[in-house]
Length: 439
Image (cartoon, rainbow, N blue to C red; front, side, top):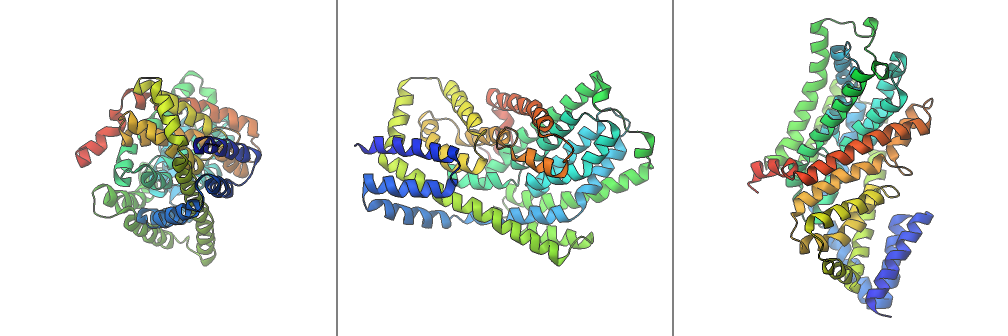
């Protein structure tokens, strides 16, 4: 049996095993070693060792647990509640104001913390009771909360972007800069959609009653200041230092952890139990991501050495499809993969298999990475995995999973519109890194 055919069988078995429910990381490692040994002999084990050592030497990956830890500390800090309360008071008379408040607050928190689960849970805890009491539509409310939370994987300092950079050979700082445009574009699309829907049908999001928005201009300004200033300081300390070249992502993440801990102490939210919970959750999540990265790296290396990737690339290139059409086809494949798989599996396993095609067609790798990041937001809004739905269901048990899914579906369509705009107008993603880095 030829090595190329072995690689194809390995890929099919990998997809089948994951769909059945086998753990992704162990499936990748086991199949890589078995088929690598059959096709390459003892070299398969040397490949495993060298790929593991090489990945562990990637310094930027040290930022992954630090950014995750910062997100959990921010979750405990109580800053998000003040920010949301300020927007609620300021925009109360406007139909759909709570939708806008949720989306703006989630965007700002996502920039500061870079996590999805924490954002969705906190927004659900804060907004669900108020939205329910105000008579807001359940489906749109669920969509706004979950869509706002997913912005945390796109807007820097997203953990996903830290993992994606080394895998795709792209600077994390440039990737951060390129995702600002699409991130704010999607936030704007979400906000405009909610306001237009509520203007046409005010019953979807009626203005808040006077008793829910009492407060002087000074009180509103004070709440917004207490919510915005700490976030702004933390954003400058992390993102600013990365984008301006003052610090590496790992160094900036370390500063972000110190800043988040300091803010939690200042706001009186710091306890040893909360610190223990944050450390435990960070260890659990970061070890999962890093171990999957190692296994995905080994699988990809064996798959490449067997030659299947080269055969597949040459076959696709022989079709002589225009680069834009090939890019659109790859985006459709990644969108479909987002339904059963979460983003780590897609980035660490499937994206490296597609990279040779992109390189052969001379498509800008930074632009391609940004499009993947935008596309992978749908993985949090598309069933059956759709982790955002389960995050929200956990804090809003009275909302049915069906209503949550239907609400998420509306915003998933908006995400696809945003993705199409980024494909049609590449400058949405590329203007900022060109301005900063001259590329």
